[in-house]
Length: 471
Image (tube, rainbow, N blue to C red; front, side, top):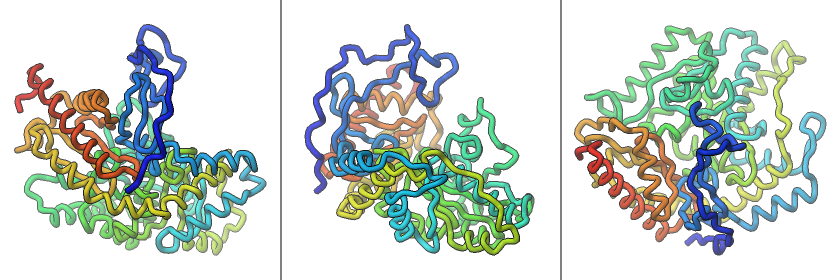
């Protein structure tokens, strides 16, 4: 059984931790609303240990989202803290333009040894958005060098999330990502979200797979295979609500890509480094060998910002054989191959492979089985998950899976109740997402499920009392 590393360190309790909108805040956090920019102050998290965090009200909370899908080995792991300090005291930084460093070289070899197929090269970045941006720019460079400058369209899916940089955000498939934000819409194309729960009425799972493949083929015929450079897919659509594809979906989409010389990019920013029980999940879980894999988050368990792109050796061989040996991939980041980040990633992978991956695979069925019991609550339309990630989707009525009229608040309401009871939840409109640290044990899973049951039940009572739901 995995254990925590000790008690959450004692911290001074803040008497009033509620948001104070009477004064402007210097810190602007992600996704603010125009009418309240500078006026919101989110709740403070002061300390963490293992699967727990402590907030400014002195509450000890199970970290249900593991930060943001990332604190895989748990908070306050002394071995990672030691690696961070030791590397900082050895070599803090060196420019990746003119020099290299031992941690970067060692990490690159470790990743190449563990990646599927011929993914033997890695370009290291600072996070998931920059990893996806790098993969897309590499696709553009690859086609330019090969004399195909028109082959640049990028196909993603509705419900997808791929990042916050200009090009990566253009691929996001959630309406709120684009309502007020510009993007490279001329380069992006979207396919139907591969969500079995909300597939067209009357379609079987097999027929839904046929529909999704046919839709992709129709798009290729319409746009022209000579204009489509890449298809990018999260193996599990994470921020879309933990949407798990049908069994053969990814292998069928990859086959279409290979047939039409379209690069297949697996966005494993969430699913890699143990979330599904493996260092990389593309081949081990879904049976695909992508041309590129993007990763971040769990590679350092959130202890240092780091990401990267695994790249097929075939692509580099083709670049070397081109008629443009002097063509430069003019792309890089100041903190590419950061020695501290790489040292942390090395130690993190060692910890994962020294029992944590085994534990994650062993406890995942229990985690999914226990969460599934929440489907007896009238507000819950579906509980779905794989590995140590799950989504609880709330609906107005389960006969038709209709959305609630106040969808945007339901997840937040559940989260507020759960925090009072000892659990952090990641609310996504009408959903609650769970992706706890991989070191969670069965007793802690039981606590998560019991608190969620109480939080959802209290939300049901609130909605009935306010006349917002008749369930």
